[in-house]
Image 1: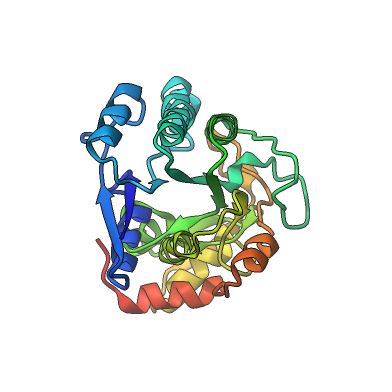
Image 2 (image 1 turned 90 degrees about the vertical axis):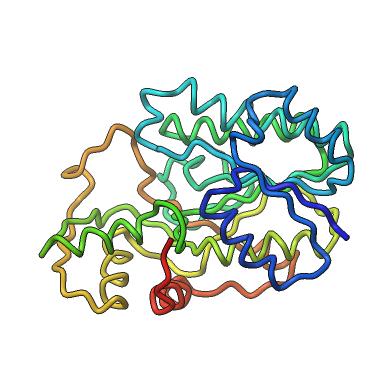
Length: 287
């Protein structure tokens, strides 16, 4: 039996892990939210691990993800995304547990015009991106046995995300404008959850940074159009440049991730983003 601690247990990725877990009989997964386990408090984590000495893996789904709000709450963003990650890494090191940490495409500046590899230089242009990058650095310094998985544009049936926001807006609007010059890859959190569990089941020691998103490329405009098409919604979607939709935080213009490493190491097939989106929308059970 493999015992796994999942932090951020009420978030969309953890909720998807709960769904994936049903397919496996040999996993004992402990889910905690910030009220049960505050990753910013080192002593809380130490106490939790001492009370649960059987923990083999920790999947860190806890994160500060309010990209724009982070610009005015930098201290809080760094506390959760950097100090919290550091605390988990230190305690995992003390208890011989392996840390799987979820990071982001926002560690890149978006100035490249081809998919980012794991060895490309990070250069975040937002507080959120900087806090997530610092978390990566802290983990690498504190713990050898780690997997850092950078992903992009996560959505799912759960929590707050772009897909659910679009569907909600479509209930009250005839038209909507969506940015068309920021390019990345929509990623279904359920697909990411599946690969995380696969990594654990391989028992591999090929630690390090990996990129994972669905296959394909899209703008937010194209993502929105596909959402409405699959949902059979007649709302009109207008493409606009990001200069017309100014936000407190800058976003990368291009943040497509190169998945060759994770495909080669774990021998996985990655679904195309439209196929995963279709599955989620046709399923139609949102929480």
